[in-house]
Image (cartoon, rainbow, N blue to C red; front, top):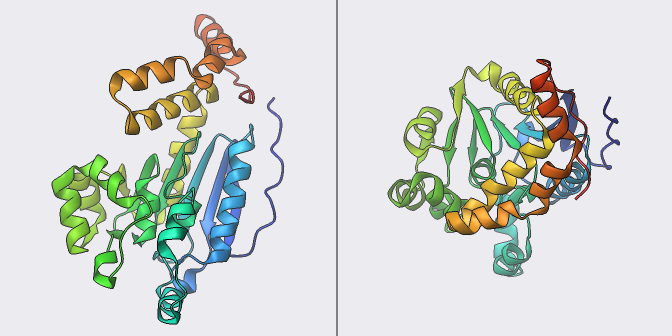
Length: 280
């Protein structure tokens, strides 16, 4: 048996934390009346809970979703306007110093898989969060936009390079320079950052099903593979290969208990019984 995880750190009612199945945490943005627009408090909650998730060896996958009719409407533009009009805003400094990006998610380099369950849609920073997730499940009525240019601002929290990397320059330019809204079907078929489109009522259950499929695998192997994917975003194939091969994550795979269990289970024609990965 694996050890149970510790309770999450204190957080406000703006973030709901639940555990829908073993080894999986579900994070629900909980400002439905404000379309789950990001606030300093919600960002703080996400930062502390995600830091905790990263360190919890018994939690292997996270799902992020939104309460109500929309995933995340992005930044709170009313508050942003107040800051701008006051002359006290320091966006360049704030963006540059924010290690994890919008919502502590849009630039976070998680070592564990992150799934987005997008209900209703995502706009601005919400779409930037989606672009940094490993797997995206969208409701059939979901819509996505990076409309910052329409408001005189920029999708500066990681969305520009990620969309260009995923969709290619021309499709990224189409979405970013016009600020257009696209459907879940377009995000799936044309832009390539949605994995599956399902009925809206099934978004979270489908994300949980995918999470179950991931946690059925060795957590050591999954986390090493995730590290290889992250390296591929910023290195040439050969550089990524070398760094991945000699990484701590790969070392843990080859010297750990789960590789022995996986191979033994195969020879004995049974399901493996994985253990929580060792601390790196």
